[in-house]
Amino acid sequence: MGSVTPAGRAAFQRRDPRRTGLYSFESLPRELLPALERPFQANPAMAAFSRDLVHWTADAEPLYRTGGNPSRLDQQYAHKVSLVYNPKNATFYLYYCACGSKGRGIGLITSRPL
Image (cartoon, rainbow, N blue to C red; front, side, top):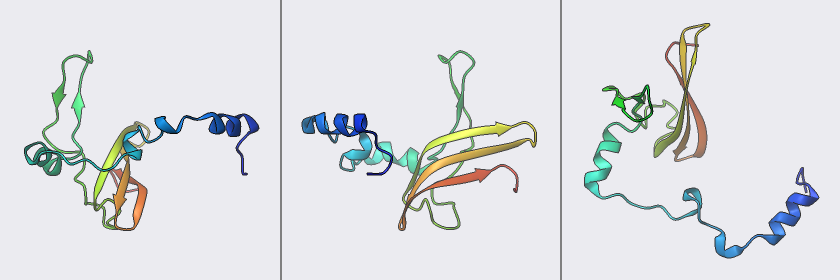
């Protein structure tokens, strides 16, 4: 049974099937109204900055456009973006979950060639 502990197996046995499928990744795909979907298609990975977590300023340029990976890894969509800056080499690393015709994967885009 792999690395699942007896306590983990017991918790799985006690789960309530009525509460399964509540998370977004477990539910059926939902469609946005076309007017709401257009901005996401045009600029799917935008950045916003705040000094107080109340007032935000959106950057005018997208961090990334879905479908831009040469391997087509993110042909359908890219989500759950994480942006990391390494001051030692002055490089931004943008990690994201991707979904394309060959399945799912994790993409990496850098601000400078590796």
